[in-house]
Image (tube, rainbow, N blue to C red; front, side, top):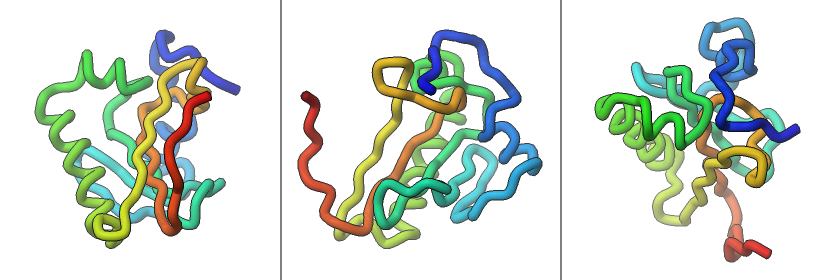
Length: 125
C-alpha cells in the first residue's frame, strides 16, 4: 500500500528494523552512511536496495534535512554498489519513489538499483 511521504518517520518500518538488526538482509554494502542489500521481491535479475542510515521518509525529506556529509555519503554509496557489482559497463537503472502517486511502499528513503538484463526505455503513460 502506498505511503504518504509527507508524514513523520515511522521507526517501525521494515528498513528501520533491518538497520537495527531486528530483521536479516542479504547485505552487499555497508558504511557509516548507507546499507545496501538484495530486494526480497526482485523486479530484475539484479535488484539491490540502498538505504541511508538516517531516519528519512523520502528523497524530499532527505534532501531537505540531511547534512551535506550524509547526502554525499549516500550518493557515493549508490555509485560504489554499482561499481562493486560490475554494473557500470552494461548499465543499470536507479529509481527512488516518493509518495502516493509513485507508489512508495516503505516510509524510509530507498534507491532501487535494477540491472542484469536490458531494461528498455523508461516510459510514463
